[in-house]
Length: 307
Image (cartoon, rainbow, N blue to C red; front, side, top):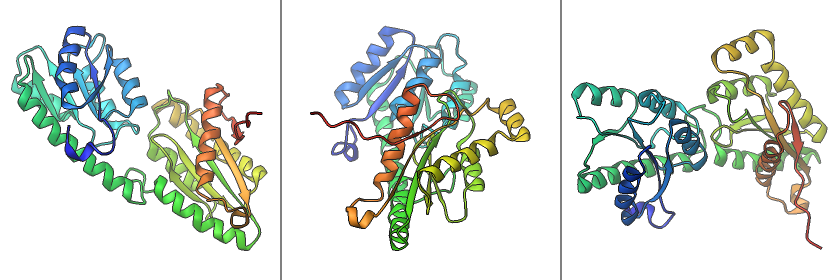
């Protein structure tokens, strides 16, 4: 495994191949090199697995059943849950012609491999691509802005939450955080949702990208009731007739859900304001796990303390 990854965690490779013997062959190469392997057997499973697992490397076979692997590659490259630096490899049992290789590269693949693999070359090239991904991830994580939307990232939101909490404490006011996400099956680009949230939010509010498809709004001088009203404004803006038709035509309905928390007196309670982000995200997850209707918003509720 690349040295840069060793101290942090084991890197995960998603292998999407309908042939179990091929998956096992790749696994026998990857595991001794220090990689963990997640298997998928269809294009749909590959897409779902890549989104949910945040795989570090994706290997797609050209013979996945009922799948246009080049279209799948393009979809993965455009998916907000998958970072642009994530290596995507295509494997094929067919001879590697120049046309096929160029098509794969245009679709966003980093490399195309035929069988049998040259194991040493494969692992060396994989290591180089993984190092580049880790460097890109580190640069993104240590910055304050999300490069895709231009909004604050999670780190920037945490810093902004502390700044806003200091301001509202001086006024003895509340600070609210709302975490918003479309349904998992929605495909509207994150740029669109981020832009609309920024347009609906007040000038004093801070909008940022909290996760692959999750956004947060930090709203000063806003209590719990105000947080709910803000979310209703967002939903109403996105449901406007012209926008609704545009979204439905291009991407399907967004189906927004949200979670929130609102607090005051951060200094006296010795509460880190960044906790609001985690609490709002926790409430959002609870709404999603409960299968709440579109447009639902849930308040943060701490887990009950055992007796």
